[in-house]
Length: 380
Image (cartoon, rainbow, N blue to C red; front, side, top):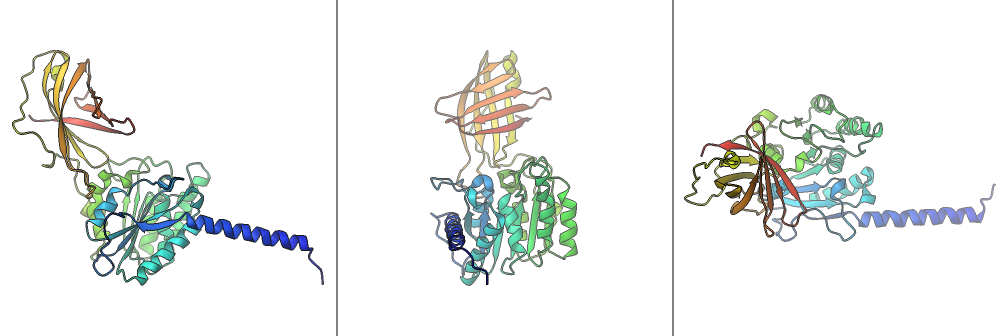
């Protein structure tokens, strides 16, 4: 019998110990917790179900344990009766098999607590592991995967964002499934929609495919307030008990026309045009931000290079607790530019386009965030 040197046994044991410790450390960096810690949970008996939000790799836990807040759709589902949980992971945990295993462990725990429905919702890597989990558990009622991806943006590895997701979708049976793909997504190899539809239809999976919806561009489109405004009804239907909807049946027309949700001061009047380059800015202008807010700029007076206006926004979507409001602004006209700058308020910048619309930019007072918008003129 061949004897194995003691030093080799010791090295093997040491490696196993280090690997086990690293595994525990990585697991400790996966947190499963209420998405809204300041809002009491309804509990399994009272809630419609348990919804688990899984962020993408860009929403990772940081070294100070801070994270990006829950997306608009999490507020939306909470306010429609769901207990919402967040599955948070650090960068070193971005390994789909270990993430999925831990996600499934939490699904089992939620089921043991008596939740009638368990729904997994995720963006990018979060959508990816939601699809993987759906093929491995009968305790999952539905999934919503928004721009699912895991393998980065560099080809040829990025092609796995298509071929591998098809394999995982082929394992899904009986789980209500919503998949959304978006134009100009750098993580999307392209052409995933038709193949996804073929796989889910072949396996008789109740499903909704939202493929390249008009007006949406980029990897994070599914997290936007605009997407919730248009497809919130779809998500409720997917997580409900009725027939699965089709895109044309449940998409709303939000953002096509103004609503009555933008507050304006009473007696608002627009002064007659006094001539000069600033006269083209006079009037009411309307548009929508990607965060799901309508915005209105009412330029009430222009004299020389000075302008007076009211800037107003609607509420945020999904019960995110930001009500509509308006502010009075004073600005300056320079050629085809209209700027409103105040040290204590957001900066507003507008450029008159050749087609008669306004290209606008909102810059937070602290300079840390921006929102772009294109406004069109409304009748006064």
